[in-house]
Image 1 (cartoon, helix red, strand yellow):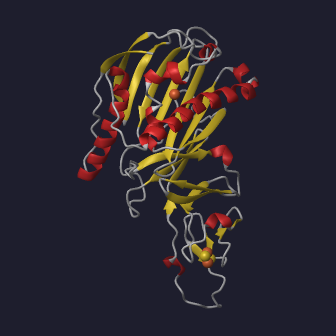
Image 2: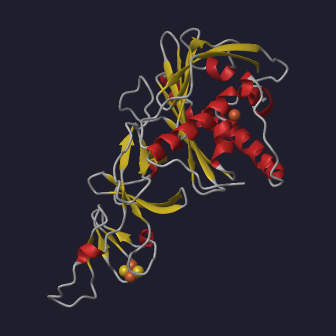
Image 3: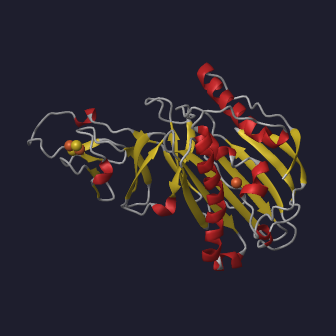
Length: 349
Ligand code: FES
Ligand SMILES: [Fe+2]
C-alpha cells in the first residue's frame, strides 16, 4: 500500500521553532531520513544527517556546545555545516584530511516561528531547484504563531492530507457542540482558483458560522483557504477588526507515520488570555481527524480501491493531479504546470 514516492525538491514543515532552544538538539526522522536539528548560541537553526560518519552513532546523542556537535562515541566534532573539525584520537601533526568526513547538511529556514527543511532529490543539489518558497500565512509579517498542536497520524501521508481538503467529512467527523451539530447539512457552492503549487478556495463570507469562528469577534467573518504541495493548508479568516490564520502542515516521517502540525495566529487580544482553554479544542478537533484515519487503517489492510466522488472529492483529486504533475515536471526537467483550473464546486456538508 504505502510507497516511498514523497515529493522531493520541496520545503517540508520540520518543527515549531519554539521547541528548539539555543544550544539544544532535536532528533527527528523525516521522509525516512534521520535528521538532527540544532540551534546555535546565536540562535541560528541548522540540520544535519543524524548519523556519525565514523561509526553511525546518531549525533544527537552527543554534546552540543552551541557551536559544534561532538559525537558521544569517539568525540569527533562537527560544525554547523557538517564539516568535521576534530578527531581527538589523531596524534599531533597527523595529515589526515578531515574534509573527507562531511556530514550531509540540509537547508533550513525559520519563518513566522516555524522551521522548514528542504528535502532535495539528490545530495549534490543542495538548494531549491524550483521557485517554491517556504509557505507563509498572510497578514502576520514575521510574527510567530500563538498556538501550536502536533499529532502523529499512523498512516501514509496521503490519508492525512486528504482530511485537510475533504469537505464531506466535517459534519460526521467533527460533530460537536462547538463546531458542527450534525443535524445540519447545507449545500455549499465555492469558487476555486489555481494558486502556486496548489489551489485556493476564493474568499467568501462564512455561512452558518460555527461557535469556534464566532469567538473571533469584529463582525461577519470571511475566509480564504489555500492548499499547496507538499501538504500545507492555510486558512485566513478575517472580520472587520480581526485576523486569524491557521497553517496546517503535513509531513511524512516514514511510509507509515505522518506528522500533522496546526498553528494558529490571531490578532484578537482577548483570545490570547483564554489560550490555555482553546488549545484542548484545537487538539480535540485534530484528534477527530486522527481517530478516523486510525479506523481507516483497518480497511486499508485489505488494499481496496478508493473512490473519489463528484465535487466533494474534487479537491482530493486535484491533490493527486498536482503531485503527479510535480513529479512529471521534475523528471522532464521542465517548469511545473498547475493542472487546476478555475472552477465552481458544489457539495453538501
Ligand atoms: S561513532 Fe561518532 S565519533 Fe566514532
Ligand atoms: Fe477534518
